[in-house]
Image (cartoon, rainbow, N blue to C red; front, top):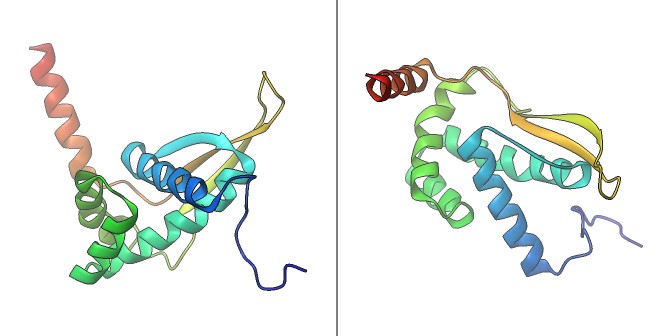
Length: 136
């Protein structure tokens, strides 16, 4: 019986599963959305929502806890600066999973997982300024 045992095994060892989700949650916060299978996306929601909750707390202990999961310091700094503004009025549900359909090669069901909330306007302005400098 599996009473009170949460989380999916995904036919992997514990260390492989932990490394997989650490890499996936890092990519999610780095790029804003990623494409993966349904099962991985549903499990990734738990990891991502936990990290956003830590980012909304914003203290040093929460930052260190996030750094123990996300190993890229720049991603953690960006998340902790953007998350309190982006997710201020939300009490949960920081990610959205959209089903895409079967994958061509093996017919695995694919999904896109993306962050909800309004992206901060300051990051868009920085990107536009870099594009203008590159074209000039």
